[in-house]
Image (cartoon, rainbow, N blue to C red; front, side, top):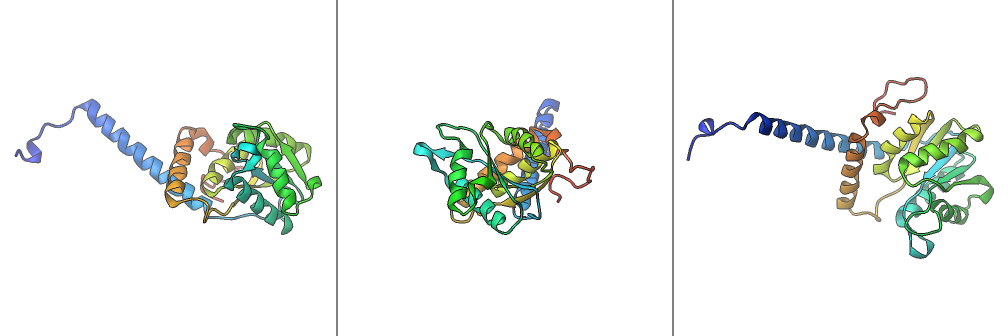
Length: 217
């Protein structure tokens, strides 16, 4: 067996690939750690509106567990007096009705008046949630919002809404009991990849040019 020192060294291209793979792996898992840590925080405070991001609607208009948890969290914040109204954001996915329409029924069941709910039914992605929601929010004079979603989703969601010029706080929907640890790890790493593929999104700052980083508050 040849000593390691005598083995042929990898060529320049191979070395470059190995270095790039190492940097990418480190970047993904480092950012995944940020995504996880950020999702543990609930910094909901007084706001102009609560924005609830949609999730999958099952056949027959049945809400997924994520959709139920997000609306229940937003309803709890509403009853605490965090904000006077809810913007329910989510378009039609694999089947009708829209995610926003299903969320409306859940919100009313949770004691939120229908008159305190506004629907945004065009969006089909997180970027859409922010882009289409900001129109409604500005029409109603809302500048500071609390975004409600699953923990692993909140960092990217906040950055998307910040990019639209809003002051954003976040509040995680409870995830215990409805998602296995392995699934949460998968979605957290997936979010890290999504952020790495949009480096400019990571640079979005709070209005006024706050210096906090992507995982800052």
